[in-house]
Length: 138
Image (cartoon, rainbow, N blue to C red; front, side):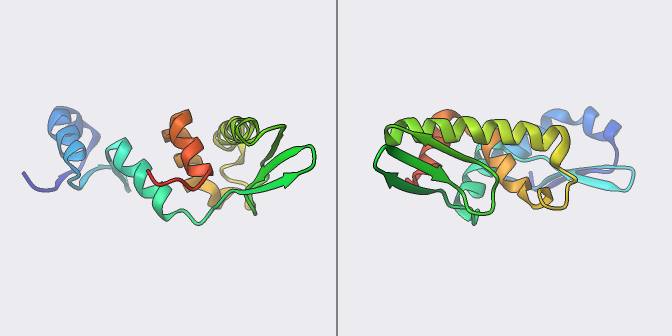
């Protein structure tokens, strides 16, 4: 089985198993609906790719009373008495930002380009998000 392309929602629905099987194997899998075409991809493959290629990098600042974590260019920051506490707060703040982005910010000019960051946050569990924030290899 190679790439799978379905030219309608109905055709994709009728071949849903083949569509999902292709995505899970890493093959190209697309569905056309009206004039739009969407890709179906395996979540873990997409998450790993986004974590590897994203240009956003968290910065940690050690201060007398604890730690601060921020990502330059992203309106999210967090503080904590320990590094672990600051990273946990940052993960929570990123999850709140991702929800706000999906609810109302996705079309705002100064937030529109954060699509990949939001996808990365939403597709990561707490352990994965922590590792990404700290720059740890997957």
